[in-house]
Length: 398
Image (cartoon, rainbow, N blue to C red):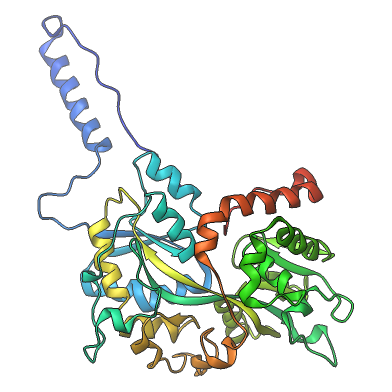
């Protein structure tokens, strides 16, 4: 998604004394027009950039962001927001920063990706001075949840990767444990999982009875990785997905009976599409979603202005009322109420609600930041060995 640079080769040197006066004027006019067409717009000193380019995730999530964040920001500042979509990872960011040409001003990333990108020097440093205190004056440091403020990123939401299933697929019984994802005798039918080790590896080990606090210690060993992959390999048939809307579409089409996915997208499918699905909260993988600014971003100052705006208590509350991702501020969590269109109590659908979070796994993004290449390569190699060259390269996740 790197924007191509438009340029123009330098004009040849001419012997002007041999060129007629009329030809000289024509040549100068052509050069002037060419410079006007191809030159990048230059902001005058003190002039503010009037567009913010954001890389986000699309789908129901982006639609909620438009209503709660992007449109209000444009209304408040006059700065337009243009959104481009991606499926995660830092490969494109790494390439863009290496070339010194980051085409985005602001990134909506998972915290694990942001930590890896920050460690590689791919992100701009951030100062908490751009953040506002809570409405009652509570300081930024006390109002934000622990682990929400990093050197290069600030958390704005807590989302979860979960498993959803069709209610009509299992008459007389319902899945209640994450181990049921792998039990195709009691719960027969095709499954869909994201083509990434994150969540899948944790769920596989949980299905063996591995305690949550031991997951990443075991996954740090060859034995743990082999156990996890063996459990995943037992699922048949198994469909892999990359883009966030795919698992919802597969469930809607009855192509699969159980699928992993993002809790917000499943919520939207249940509420807006009346899709007969249910979320299995057991084993949900919680992760922070953060704002970050790529190194060399042309609109870095506008991006900082937006982060300050989008992380206020009222904007976080507005987003959580549209899509069930938990705010990163205590003051916003207390204000989450009902969906403005459907009247649904959103508090019961956010991953951090006590009823949903009882057996949650908090993704260890320090572990992923330090091991995502090795584990990702191991994961993909195992899939390629089984499925052959028909498996496309992984685009999303770590």
